[in-house]
Image (cartoon, rainbow, N blue to C red):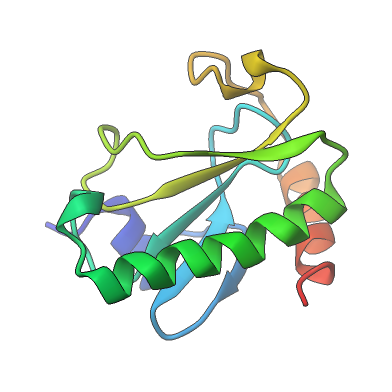
Length: 130
């Protein structure tokens, strides 16, 4: 069975997509810890990040770095935090989280944002991509 992320890639499930290329896609987290919390994933469905081949792993991090730069310009924050947990969905994903305090990285705190808010955040981040 395809992961929820593979279903987003296939456009079977809607998402606030920030950017994508042939290998990677970035979209807003549906259950963010902060405004602008974004997930970056490879399009190949691999469960564990350290099972990725070196080229895919390096490409994922380079793509995440580009997205982080756009988030940092679009969302007021001190820096962008990066987390890889990998327990919630069996598909490699990197969390990019705008940080103003350590508590912003607390995955037990979730924001409830409207569709309009999420769409606005996604558009603002997209506008800041190089």
